[in-house]
Length: 508
Image (tube, rainbow, N blue to C red; front, top):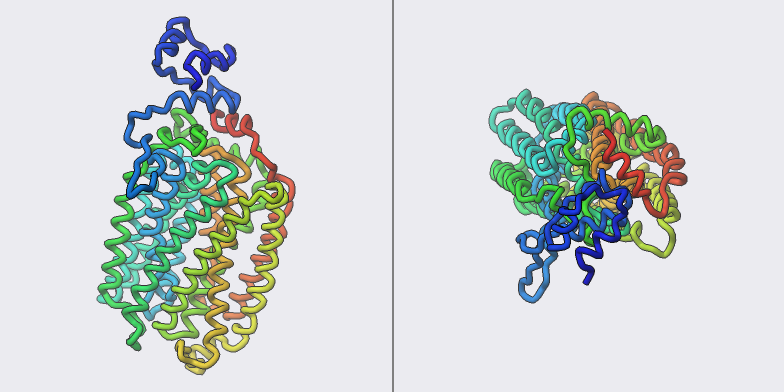
């Protein structure tokens, strides 16, 4: 086992400003804090991380339960799993209602307008949420973000009783502000707590657990409506979701501060010491100034929620009765889980270089876009807004002839969603390991994603023709992949540059 003297001797004098007394204290087992500002080389930072772990702390100890050895709570993977379950309870469960179309109500216009409010507020704040997250910490950011979801689903319950659409729209705006906090913290944890070779797997684990919330949540309305012809959800459904979402927000307080987290190899998360509001807001613009090519990813971000409006409102809502929509939503969520696992584990496989894998992933995503959405065109040709408004389109039940083909298409939409999101996160994670930079990246991602969603929900609320909604979705997906290709083909390397990450992290 390497002694403290040996560890100290491997650190160049140029990186450590210490007195003889400090060196003597290290040789006796005392801890000396060597910050990233004083250690510029990755290997020396790793030595500092390993030497500073206090194994007497409960969160640094492994525990054995029923013969299975659990990872220390402070390990990055444990924290990623924890945030996965938090988002599982907050967003995953609530997605089950959203996937039914019109939030489980009969008034699509009110819910569409509330979604415009959600995503407009989300887009505005998420752009600046990276610096906020870096300043106040991921734990506070994530916890605060959860409460807006509980308020929003409370407003849907209120709407079923009072018809107060204004409250739903106002609650949507508040949910959007809170969602910006939640998703920025989530993306930061998921990407910066992972080792380079495991980012795809950790994205897959997060997405699978998160979508299991949608799977379980979809079972609730399915069970309640399986023998019912009602087209609205029961009050008890909304109440159950509000309780679960609130519990998830409380669970977020159990996360560890980033400074106590270690990756699986024992190294610290690259984290700026003592950030200020000025330094974090400046960093936001520094990323765009130093990396203007990153803007090439923005169309992919814009498209990443655009298709959800078409899938939930213009496909699922208008063609099927409530119990069949519930079944569709369940299968959609299951295929999102399967899609996330297949994408994440493939992207992390090492039968080729990471640079080559980025290109393979891009090619597969392009192929899926052509095939799956090309298949969706046939379904869209059978109805228009006019035929739906005139009640000329009969709602399908799972007992209807030909229903199976529509279900398969909807399941493939779910898998496609998971592939798109997983690949986008994987690309961002392949560009840097810096927690500070990743918070900004994910802030950009969620801001631009939400801006696109606000636009498309408004278009749907204005009764834009279904074919136009479909065409805009398919066209944006194909176009954004082409625009992002130079970034994917030229900027993803086999390993990120640690010196570049440290330089950015410590830059004021």
